[in-house]
Image 1: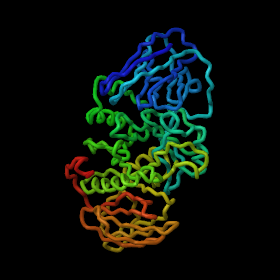
Image 2: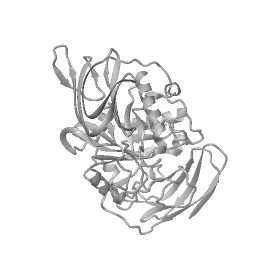
Image 3: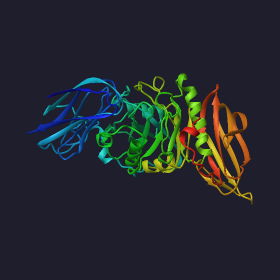
Image 4: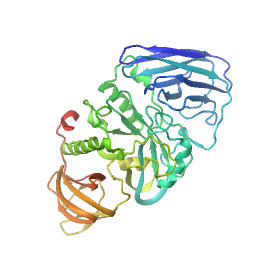
Length: 452
């Protein structure tokens, strides 16, 4: 069955095809035959309204199928009963575009299936991967062939092993991988919401697939619609990230409810020299958020769109996020990220010891994201190479130190925060989250006022 259509000049529209299927024995197959190269979600629903396939016109993979079992279904699909009745194919166009598309729907075709992949419906957020209390490292922003990237999922285990990653969030545009390789490190279901060109947002740690046609039918993509989608993600305890927020074309160039966000991406694809300025601007905006009382913590992401051949040829893991956990589960990982117990590095793991010193000169170990009871802190830090360290207090440079080691004591003023930036060859290499002394009250300033 061939389905074709044309998009009108409307800013946002949802096209629906009703498909009357009978006698489905093996599967239903969706073939993206001739589609515009746009971030338009394509959703196939069964007669009960359950999402069975969610893909995007941008996908480099073109064939998807849903069967009775996980083994009989492709990535980006969910299995279930192959019932007779009206199935719906919904194509969501979330921004202005005019053009044609051609899809094909097939049924009962023998497909090559793999048994060596993880089932999203069985993903265990509570599984304990390690009991150790330490820093764990991973990638928070990467794309595969299931949107506009080149990463083949079959190559991902090699990348995880060579880079020594403890976790990976796959964030394909608008879709969630439902079948990921079996590895010793979790590959966590996530997506990059991409509904218009001026705003991309990662949802980290999803348990279900988004229903874009239900969110957007008859409505333009505006802040109030995004808020509804954000609330849907929050109900799953996913973390919301404001991605590359100062990018001219893909940044956040309008006001959103800042209370929706947990994280801000301040270091995006640092290997790309063209992106240096918007990362500098994002770092300034991060300090602006902190100064105005918003505890939205910093993360980095490679935003890799390359395949993994070996670690020197891939952008995966550049930069890495180091997250401290008292025992590693995905729930613990999400919680540590949410409270800012992390830092970003392009130069490998740092050796930290961080203490709060009481009036009685007693030391208590502390971590990024914490609020202190006493204003005196002591920091010992070691790196593998010489770095220019900039010590930041309330958005201003308190002092600078050059070397591979850092030993300092600082007395913080009331209602303040302290964090560290590290520079190598004039490029930002380390960004830590803050620690706080006292409470910085929210000023009520909006995003456009803060990001200036």
